[in-house]
Length: 238
Image (tube, rainbow, N blue to C red; front, side):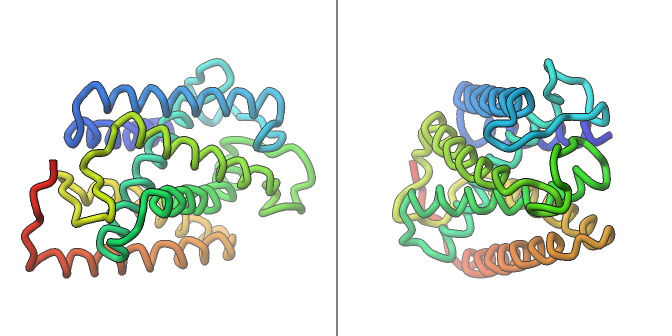
């Protein structure tokens, strides 16, 4: 069921790209993100670089070589949802933001999601096991994992922008002209709140608090953006 859920949300992110961009760009974006995810996960599990030493268990299957298919679709979902959530928030909260601010914000949202996912995936569901001192780092997860997530997410966001050639993103940012623009924030926030709840229920309180600290402002800014947008008629952007 975990595999089915992660594959489903990854496909949802892909279909959303198809709706807003042409089919070729959407598919190429998915192939690139899935391919990069597979490359770094294979390298990580076999060498311990760049994340740290870990191994996938049999909890997630099927696998492509040693990497669960679900993990690849999780990368696709989190990159797409983080980027377009950041884009939507900034278009309303900070219209003067430039593309570098957008990429950095997207990266922070991605890494925040991993901060919530790691304790549950490792200690509760045993999707993967970290090898080493489980009392060190962050709930036994080495800090190198989050450094790697920051760098990889940053690169992946730029790859996504390059492939889709996001002409609908006008800088300074303007009100989003994207169709069904609420879908990426829903994917991101559902994932965030699910892991925040699981962390709190399993007494991983720091991770749960991080989820609240990240999620509540995002919800507030998104709702504020909706309130600001209602009386306005978005300009046509091509």
